[in-house]
Amino acid sequence: MYITRRERFSSAHRLLNSSFDKTENKKLFGKCFEMHGHNYELFVTVTGKVDSKSGMIVDLKDLKKIIKSKVISKVDHNYLNDVEFMKDKITTTENLCIQIWEELQEPIRLLGGQLYKIRVNETENNFFEYFGNKK
Image 1 (cartoon, helix red, strand yellow):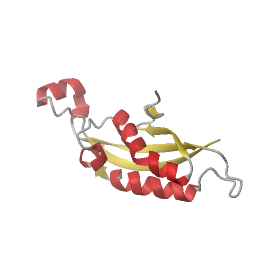
Image 2 (cartoon, one colour):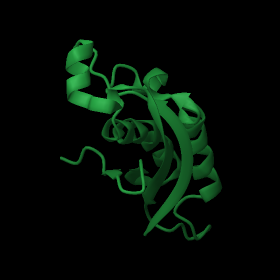
Image 3 (spheres, helix red, strand yellow):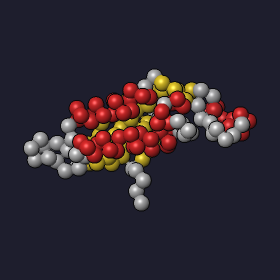
């Protein structure tokens, strides 16, 4: 069984590699080197067994609280390059997915579920999915 919670947030960012100079960054990232923003959609998918007492994998109200406190409150209407869990990272949506996973994996486990997938829609045409570091 899988359940998914959707949240939305708006953030600005610029893509830059701190080990490159401005010319190299501009060449690598093009117009994304300049500050710009997106209206993102975040999908958090959790898996697990349905609890016989509650009939749920996890309570969606609790999942919503975790997502809001660990991610949305930090990224919504903020500059991703300054968000603590994105510090020293190139703020691509790939890296954003990985860092959101890192923020949510343990709190979801403590709820009794297992984080299955993070999906972030950056635009109507571009979305990114991360299934953890499966070895």
